[in-house]
Length: 137
Image (cartoon, rainbow, N blue to C red; front, side, top):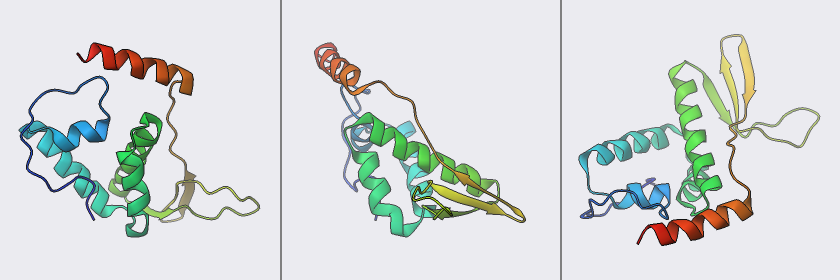
């Protein structure tokens, strides 16, 4: 499974304001963004295979909260792997039903890691999407 589509890209236009991160990266035919796709595919390949479908669907979501949250989880996962941590996805936490994104373990150090993004309210996002559609023309 891949994060991006295996397609021939011919559109070199820059990012439109109304376009999702995934839609832009998936369509753009520029070498600098081909490198971004390659890097993100490498991150995705190192991500827990049993969570591939979830992270892929969220990253491809038109809702920026979902897409950016998935991107941030990929970044945090890759960062902590690079720091030498083993990562368990959605670990059970004693005495609660909550499941953080990761349990990070390295030697005798372990901690729970939850990736969070800050965004606009749903009403504000809807207003911005309408504005962006107009500004894209």
